[in-house]
Amino acid sequence: MKDMKKFLIASTLVGGLVSLPFANAQAKVYWDGMELVPGQIGKLTVLKDTELYKLQGNKKTFVKMLKPGTVYRIYNFTADMLGVGGGYYIKRDSRIKYQTPSKAKLSQVKREQLFRNTKLGMTMSQVQKIETGKLIRKDSQSLVYSVTFLGHKADVQYEFTNGKLTGIYYKIYGNEYELAEGFTKFYDHVQQFLIDCYGNKYMDLSEQGLRIIVFEQDDYRVGLSTAPEEGLNLSIYQD
Image (cartoon, rainbow, N blue to C red; front, side):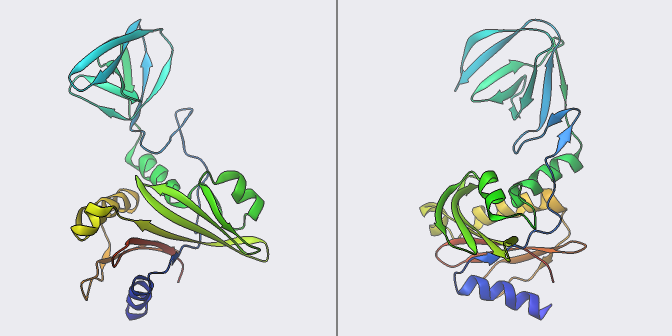
């Protein structure tokens, strides 16, 4: 327990990137013949001709008619509308069929966000083909990208040993408002994301003004900690 706490606190105090060896990275997640993507909460199948609308505030604008048999991912909803992304909505009525995946499937998709679709043992060229962030540094043993994680700027570093992927390092940066209020809401947001991934059983190791939590899995641990004047460190690591 003490060694784990020292690891998380040390990584925070030095302001360095936190090690994330990939444990049990998943393949793409499929549900009912469709790939689930981050942010998706369900799917809609059009049964009868129905309208597609664009919502801007309280204004609803007709866009086009949708034909039976078409399927759309759902990302959000209002009282009587389902959001298909980009501010477009479909009325929730008997002309459509709305389905939602299990909590286990949704959790699996969020874990994929953490793992960024890579796997332990991949080569550098394989990771480069998968990673969509902006490459900011490359050498013989590492790749560093500027990415977005949960709507926040982050740096992610992939490390390679003998040509194989052995670890990842994340630093998630807060904005000016989050820095001013001490990361409270920012931290809570990422913590809830991890709870959605792994459940609400975790260890709270916070001390010395630092917030630290750890989720224990069968063969790896997930840790979240604050980084003074910067943002958050997120770690996935094996003992």
